[in-house]
Amino acid sequence: MANSPQSKKRARQADRRFAINKARRSRIRTFLRKVEEAIAAGDHDVAQAALTTAQPEMMRGVTKGVLHKNTVARKMSRLSSRVKALKA
Image: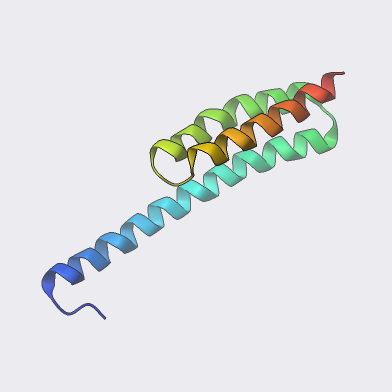
């Protein structure tokens, strides 16, 4: 439990950041789910559009420190190859 004024402030800041990061992570997952659903449906055009909108959101998660750079790079690479395979 926070006792000093500074530790109380830090606890408030941590709660605020947690809520912001949680919302951003949830938003990223929503974008990824849209891509996954389009891939499962087999619709290349919708999947490509969903991936195009998901990429900037994922990179924003990297710059904000929510996700690691390599994690996002790996996910984007795998998703893009799966979307590309739909066209063939």
